Amino acid sequence: MDSLDVLGSKPRLELLRLLSRRDMYVSELMEEVGMDGKTATHHLDVLTEAGLLESYKDGRRRYYTLVREVRVEISPSPNRRFVARFPESDVE
Image (tube, rainbow, N blue to C red):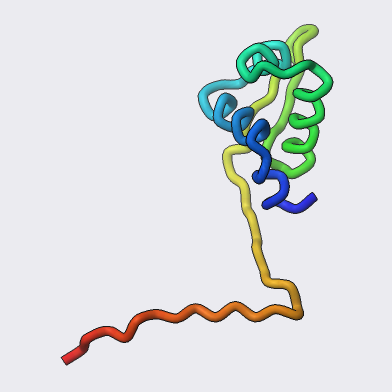
């Protein structure tokens, strides 16, 4: 799944928003977003595989935390061309 697909999900964006405030464990996230454990775990796994989250265990709880620096590279497909046009400036 590419980065845009990962970020194109409202539930995943909501999880990222919550985790931008503090590290949280699965049950807290489930309660905040109103989703069941299986669904929450799926979304957290997708975000972790995409390199946006990391997790760690504290006792019996698994906490999720945002990766503080993420690099995303976007490039056009080989068969497409992107053209940027800028208005001409009024230089005197």
